[in-house]
Image 1 (cartoon, protein in one colour):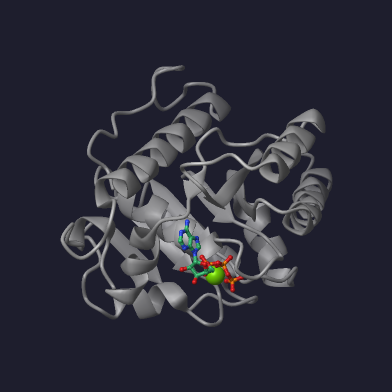
Image 2: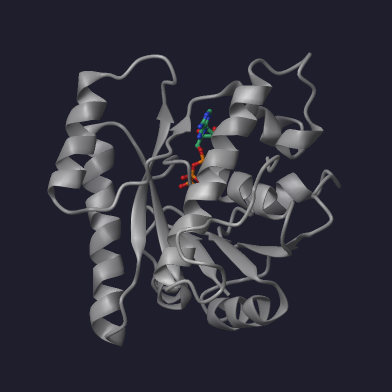
Length: 238
Ligand SMILES: Nc1ncnc2c1ncn2[C@@H]1O[C@H](COP(=O)(O)OP(=O)(O)OP(=O)(O)O)[C@@H](O)[C@H]1O
Ligand SMILES: [Mg+2]
């Protein structure tokens, strides 16, 4: 516990990228299992480079029949479980959502992407109705520019917030470093600043995401695991 699922029916929304970056950041302080539940196994491929951090375990054999068991088993082994899902609204996705303590919906800043995010939110709300248990979730804006704020993005952000949809303050900026993680099969910490531009900014972006997600989880759990309002230290995570 807790289990964090990355969900969006939109292919390429940034689920795998943000799931892996958050997992490697958390694994600097905690044991983390990432369940690579996309049948294409992008995280398993990344880990086959042999550079996964020591506190990060990867489970790549989850399918529709086993996903609930795999999440339960992982949650009993490590304090954090992160689930990367395929970009469809399959049964596997619905089962994973049912087991999640927090659902993150990565969304790029276009209206079409926002529409897809709404579909993901409907699935989360259905899960909430079926179980009668609140299912905390938030939209994560992805691939945004760190330099300019487009009117289109501001419009979408305001629309989501205006509709009462939780949006993480931290955005995942468009960064070469986030692509390089997959090209070089390394965590951010394994990349060289000589090869990858703005690596320090990329690390700061992920630290900020990890800090915000930890604070949200802490708030959702009513401060049971850590003091409310005080996010666990994540300095240097990346
Ligand atoms: N913040 C980012 N900066 C740079 N590139 C990014 C970023 N986020 C995602 N990408 C790139 O966008 C593409 C799609 O990202 P990713 O695979 O994470 O999406 P996904 O939602 O998991 O897709 P799928 O639905 O196919 O599983 C990849 O090529 C990835 O490298
Ligand atoms: Mg993916």
